[in-house]
Amino acid sequence: MKTAQLQNELATLSTVLLSNLDEVVFFSKLSGFVQDMMGEHKVLGFEVLSDGSTRLIAENGHALSTAKLLNKGLGLSGYVARMKRAYYSNSVKRDPIASTGIREELVEAELCLPIMIDGSVIGTLNVQSVKKDRQFSESDIAVINDILNQLQSPIRNMHLFLMAKNLNRELMTKIEAREKELSNRVEIQTSRHHEDSSHMIGVSKNFLEIVQMAKKIAAQDFPILMEGAHGVGKKILAKKIHTWSARKGACVVASCSALNESQLDRELFSSKGLLIQANGGTLIIDDIGSTTNHIQTKLLRVLVSGEMITTDTEEKVALNVRLIASSKVQLQNLVEAGSFKEDLYYRLNTVGLRIPSLRERHDDIKVMAEFFLNQNKPEAKVLTSGAIEKLSSYFWPGNAHELKNIMERTYILTDGQYIEAAHLPEFAQEVKVEVVAAPVKYTEFTLFDLEKKHIIDTLDHLSGNKTRAAKALGITVKTLYNKLHSYGLIEAREQ
Image (tube, rainbow, N blue to C red; front, side, top):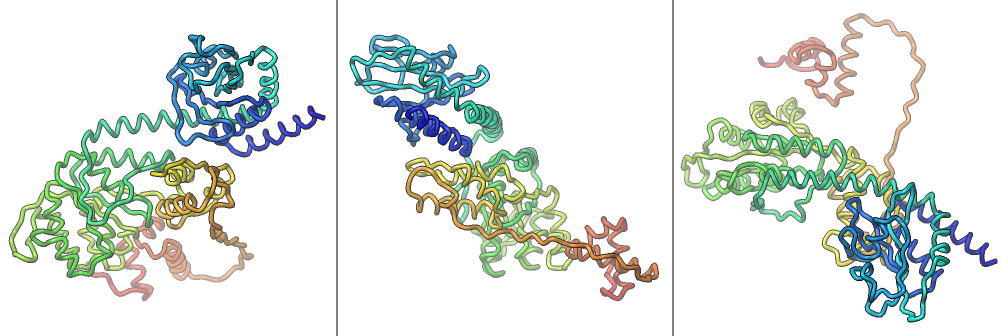
């Protein structure tokens, strides 16, 4: 009966471990199971890192808020990880191998077993006893090894997960080292609006490509246009570009949408305005698409002549400012609509960066969610696989800002260490419309009518963007305008 009960409990544990692909959950659940079975003082769960060092992350079924690291070869965990076989000491206070381990003074004996798969040690279980007469033996090793042998599937899964995580950790270390090499100085930020965070988080291919491109163009001293939806991190990346550049002046942010024309005029062009403050540095023009023709004309003059006339003193001032403009709408569409100056657009768009939305960076959702969940928090909490799956299935219209707010709210409202899917808010589901093609019926068209219909359909498909439509049709923009005029759809375009 006892054996049958143990098998049932092992089957349940295996299911739990397979459904939660997280090393903290893995070592917590496993250490708790062995502690309940052995009835000793403590069972510790150590993860073995790729460099041979070990870190204590679980104790008696509970995750530690702060992991404790042991260098390669130290303690019983380091010794067992290197030797790939179990070891026990029934007198830890006199055992030189056990002298560097992590244990309380009252511990008398300790048994350490490797958690292995295909010859690779992913962790160790350390059973600690405070009983003076406790003598660990080969029979204790056999009992725990029997448990581990029946958990080979979740151990294999965890081995593959940790391999991928270690590769990612190495990649991020290389990126951070390169970033430090490029910047090697403190970022100056004098934004009128305080940023909660300047962290850039991501491991997805398209995110890393944008970061690498930004680093390359940071060294070149020309304007940059960043486009992307609200909350994708345009301002953060703009500030990073300033950091990576050789500019010694301040990095200043102008929030265009928050001010009317006269306010923004004073904010930018007065004798104590943002352009003066950013002289020698960088001016980030946030949401430049909301500016008026008057502001655009004055910015164009700054770019063309490198000087401005102050609004309050009417003094001519020479400027050495790098402009980085951001927009949550495509400026090309505003140019087509006549609400944004074409000359300014081409000046700013010397280099254009399109920042991908969070839904385009699926691999980053888990990494960012875990960061925002525990950022500046006293105790770490863990996202279960169910919670991660729920987060990954949402389409995030608010991008990183929305994810950050949800994770901070979830941390506050959730008791306990583990965040389950039920702890997260119910997300609106993205509506997917299934288009059923109707049977095609033959209709007589002249070539003129057929061409007209195709051009109009192309414009509708591309949301009226004439530049993209002309490219798709294989004609010039000028030819497209002439055809639209011939159809009576627009007035003749001034040349």
